[in-house]
Image 1 (cartoon, rainbow, N blue to C red):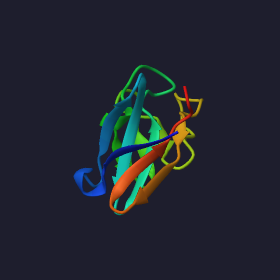
Image 2 (image 1 turned 90 degrees about the vertical axis):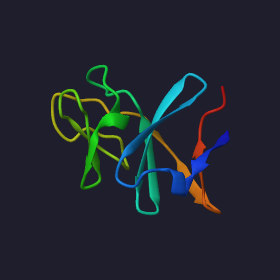
Image 3 (image 1 turned 120 degrees about the horizontal axis):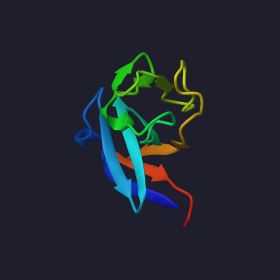
Image 4 (image 1 turned 60 degrees about the horizontal axis):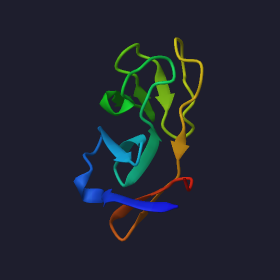
Length: 103
């Protein structure tokens, strides 16, 4: 199921934004004209990845500092050991769309 989430120009460049679709929390990260979407909750502890800082293609968990790759969702260092979900993103005609599994 594809869902339109926002116009690209309304997402801040270089920062995360939390979007909720149903009961699913998704952290969106815009870097220039690219947008990445990860499950919002850190796999190590309850922390919102949308509040983390972005460095070199990774978002750092604001609670314990584990960086997660924005493309794969894989943690790069401890204490996190499990990846977070990654959602396919498309930007068309200036709008951002997410691909979600149908309920």
